[in-house]
Every structure is written in structure tokens, then in C-alpha cells.
Amino acid sequence: MPKLTVEGVGAVEVPAGKRLVLALEDEAKVDQLHACGGYARCTTCRVEFVAGEPDAMTEAEKQVLAARGLSGVRLSCQILCDHDMTVRAISRLAGSGRANVGDRPTDEITPTPVWGKKG
Ligand code: FES
Image 1 (tube, rainbow, N blue to C red):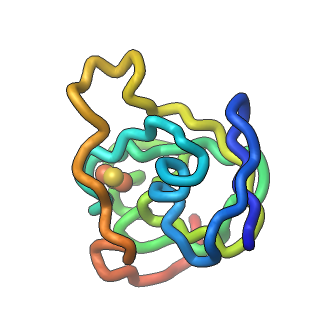
Image 2 (cartoon, helix red, strand yellow):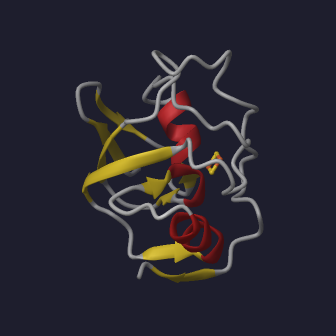
């Protein structure tokens, strides 16, 4: 099982292939935001990678990061835990002023992923 390390939180084992956003919530117990429910629209599921950033990137992630001029972050709803990774959870409910983290994303990446490489 891949190991997910969240800086300042700890390291957990994650079922291989699980969406990172769900692993942050379920295994790492982080109050990770995912306001759009995992559809690569809101970017509140963003994380910073310390190690193990995937080269693969969905077209949906690429497009929304570019549209918002974001760099240095990745969208946890568009990433699968298929290897060890270390991230910083930089977008959490605590201190966000939001009422909740958002609807739970489905187990599969949405929208249906079209895989490319990060730019
Ligand atoms: S972009 Fe909204 S949850 Fe990932």
C-alpha cells in the first residue's frame, strides 16, 4: 500500500489507487476542503507536494490550474495514490470561513480523466 505523509500530521497507509482527496480525509483525517465535490472546478482541494509529485495530470486539472494562474499546487481530487507521496495540506476547513468541506467526492476521478503530463 502506498504511504501518504502529510506534513505536520503524520504518515498513513492508503489503499492503492485511492483518490488523494479521499485519502487525506479518510486515512490522514485532514479537514481537507473539496468544495466542488471533486470535479476539478473549485481548486479548494489543492495541496503542495513535498515529495512524490506525480508526472501524470488530468486535462481537467491542467485546464483549471492554468485558468486560475496557479502553479506549485496540485488538485488532490485529480490524483490517485499509486506511489508514496508527501504533501502539505494547505486548504483546510479550519480557518477557511466555510460551513463544511464540501460534498464527498466519488471513488473514481471526475470528470472522467483524460491523462496527460504536467506541463
Ligand atoms: S477542484 Fe474542487 S474538489 Fe478538486
